[in-house]
Length: 71
Image (cartoon, rainbow, N blue to C red; front, side, top):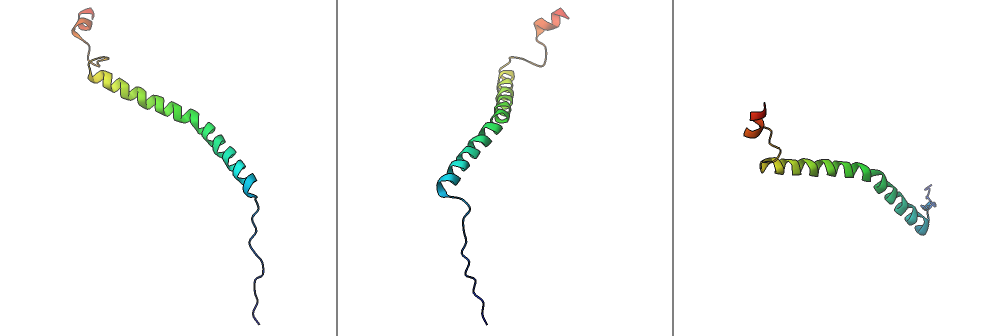
């Protein structure tokens, strides 16, 4: 005796409803991650700009001759 499986796969969502929920979820994830991304980008860009300004002679770590005279 052979048994045959007569069940067919069913989907638990409709195309229109599932698509709109996915878009809302994607937008929610973006809004939740956005503050962290902004802070990380600001820190990276700030450090990058500080490094460029230091290489051009601004914000030098070693004091200039004018500053040494005051000490």
